[in-house]
Length: 186
Image (cartoon, rainbow, N blue to C red; front, side):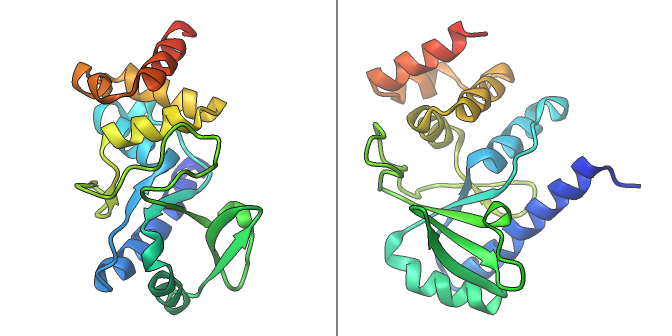
């Protein structure tokens, strides 16, 4: 018997897999980012420390948006732009909280953010079969958005030893200061 946690994780992974398979078939670069990517990386080191997320976030290139919309429609998903957020929702049940959120590589999610989403370069293919942002890129994104849940994700990644000195060295001084702030808050 599956627990609520397992059922919700299966739903998130299935959503990501469906979209990933369609994007790959259309040769559209992508990588899963956000809380699901954090979960996947932490789970590889310590499954008991992996924290469930509410949704799926995917980084894509803005230049591919028309092709992504077409691929999404074939999956029964509808593209929406709501309150500054680009998302794919189930056409039969379009709830924003169950959507796949899109962020654009090489662009800032919000104008006030320190840095842009890293370009899609060498994503890691997770054990679930889809591409996941490398830890270094994920750390930059989490430190850039720096909401409370992002800080918790940083603690999770750091707690299992995924934020290495090599990754720290790639961070801007502003992001290094934020990492130090998260570490000091433990």
